Image: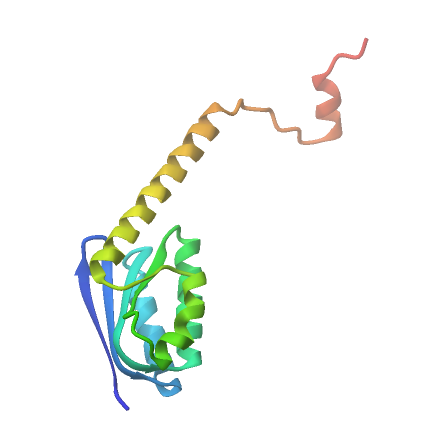
Length: 151
């Protein structure tokens, strides 16, 4: 039971290609590899098409990595074959947490869309913050009292 991981640079960040059998014995290696790769970009594409088996603990690592990428404003996109297999059945639950696509080109399109949405959100926040009127901060009740004239 061997597990292999390889990183390639892709147009929107790293492409992590996993192959072999990803058992519970390899989860620490997977965790280190994903986190080391995820530091490079908030967007990460993980190709699982050459995996023959994936353990529940490895799925947990993918879920935790997705939460980390979301906190950074990004996402993980999984690339998998749609052919029925035991691995696919076990991973289908991940489709609710992160995009699952059938090819690297489709993953690139999803990532591009995610980046555009992130930029649009950031611009909207900038516009909102620039339109907010500056309000003086009251430091004490006495300061608040002095700000208003009592008639």
